[in-house]
Length: 210
Length: 233
Image 1 (tube, helix red, strand yellow):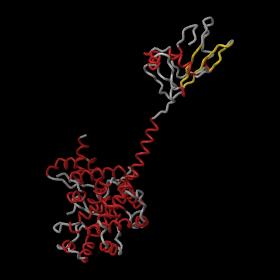
Image 2 (cartoon, chains in turn purple, cyan; image 1 turned 45 degrees about the vertical axis):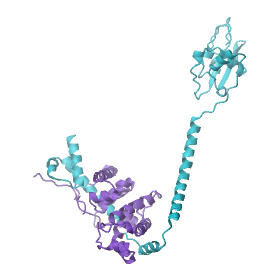
Image 3 (cartoon, chains in turn orange, yellow; image 1 turned 180 degrees about the horizontal axis):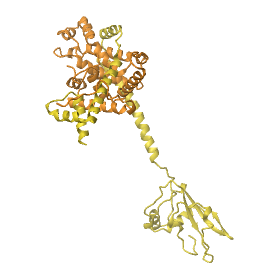
């Protein structure tokens, strides 16, 4: 289910456990089933919303809109398939329709707090450098076009496979690869040469000639 | 060049985990080329940092405990009727269209204003005969609002600039132009045009250079300055 590229740093479960008849019970108007549906899928939906908007209040608005819409169109949901790709697609669309109205995204308080809390175990120069790289990457992610940003979030944050990401983004696998490629290229360009990640970092490739 | 291409393909393969039996040449190259190894290593490290950056975005973030209550309240609320939804959509669309129409209208007005040059209407020339009228219609009309007619008249040892009746002088100058000369009318320049009409007596062919400096002559209309010696133009 997860993509094969390296270790995952994200913690979002890709496919939450879903009872078989959950959608059917919800379709019959059972509000308890709807609450279960919400509790099952709220985390990945909220994670997508917060990753795109970076605003907890806006993300919660998107979350509410998404689930209200799911309840209203519950008759059209296919019980045989997971509703998560559909929920993610609705979330992404809602996020970008709201973000485009509010061009200037204020830096959320949580990121300020994260910046203040440093890893005391690490060397100060490493902490500063690492934080700077992360800040450059965060700004780079924000600056990406919406389609590339969506691809990055689905593939690297949620860990969806290429096929799943492509299904959510409503494109084919080749297009998804292309979006990821150009997104990484853009991020790579943004990293200044002097702030580039050292090659000797733990993730560096070690190849032995076979 | 080959190394760069292999490196690009290696990056692609490494990013999407698509190494297979056909990737053996790439892996062999990777083992022998430190530059490509650095590139792929750097890319992997960047992806790792990217994952950390993305995870930091959602770290500790949870929907509030009131989220479910809000969703339940909205889900149980009566759905807006079809007409109400249609009305709200229409109002939104009209609002967007109104803005778009205003912007398009402003843009069109700006384009028209910047590309339209308002010229003063040329006075009607009364011609006694049809032939005269036809001949005058082939003569280009100089924009009188941008044209300064100056006649230099010899007075004693120097020349004095006089402004004659522009209608007469212009008609006289135009009448001297042949239709072929008059066909292209380069009157679209922004700079003001000064036509110099010089009275040059035959007895004293004094050069004009030392006296005409007081008069702006750029750009001049050649047809109007070609004068015959001894005859006023």
